[in-house]
Image 1 (cartoon, one colour):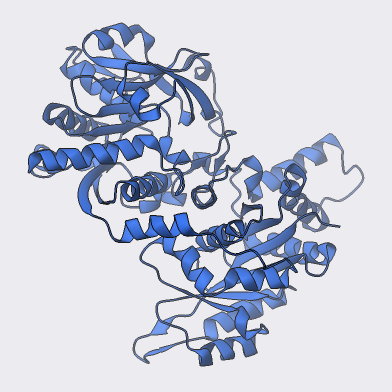
Image 2 (image 1 turned 60 degrees about the vertical axis):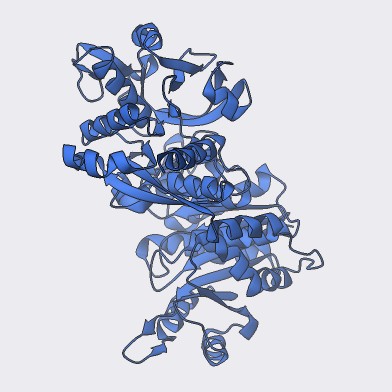
Length: 539
């Protein structure tokens, strides 16, 4: 007998419909009713994880507490639920095949022909149920990546079919997210794509229990009846998911559509508990009706794709709501920053955030933007590479080390103020070998960050290979760029701040990974507040 109830979320018609947001929204509604919920993502690509993928390929690589490099949807799960995920919450085809092949090499299948069915599907099913063994969850939501009908998704769909039979009646259900497009020429919504998508799912042996229909226009009762009739679902199981002004509205919209009630009824779970979404509704109200507005420049190398900096953008939204302030993010490509843009745009911003990244492309633009922020006393926030560029800028322009650089950008620089970590020097494999996951940091008591965190020891998530070179720490401190946070085990510098400026902070870690709706990250909250104060001081 299964300890947990399982919900499988599949997608049809088109990719990027928002399976992750629907999964997170449903999980939030169930959590608000008192159920213990977790979400996992199964991705059909053959990479073992997204750690070696360019952000243009797959968006941001999200890092969990235990150091897993995962799909960005896990960020949505944590931001909505305020519950940590782990390596078990994200599985790829690469991981599945790697495990099966390693077992074959060890002789676990000795004498047997290793095949997709049963060996690959058994491994997928084992991983789906792994969270059931690891924790006491009432409901486990499994998001299947890709679109129904994709060749690479077939083993996952077959695994779901088998698992539903094994779990038994009322212990699982399938939610199929689909698109109901609006044809402006005909001035009507079209149900045929959804019908074909459901038919494709049925050909794989799975019947959808609930349809969630993405749409730009209200779906009428007639269309709901038509979808129910031709897709073999009950009318109250046809759920409208209309475009929202913010993703944080989606749980409230799904509550109005009674998605959680339909799910609980089908899983034979009690519906008696009310839904406590007061804090969530208050957050959305502050977000939609701000009292102030500021402009923050996001200086990065991948700004063309918003998903590249997803967690940073969401953290600014959380912090904005906390400060009752609308944060307008001005995306600035660091590769093309010139003197004119510095003078006419960056100098007029209310705050500057220099984003993480890898490689030499666009770093000089980041350095110039930081120089502007430092000289004009514009609130500055540097994250990972952003912090390292702040060290380089200060070393060049204040310490007088004109050739200061990172050995990542220039291996033979005479002044390697940023250098490769010792334990990284002999590593050749790129996947999963960085300094990853949660590490402690000890904060200096007389620093600005100690006021922000209100704690001497903090824990933050990392994803990097290079660090501030300890040989230059004393010289930087003497000139005012203080190392005010260090790892107690390794002595590595985690936080810098410029004492002469009102708000100039750089961090080696990624605070954006820990910001949630219920617990906005204190650094982002303080940064947005500083930007607001700076704007007021200019007027």
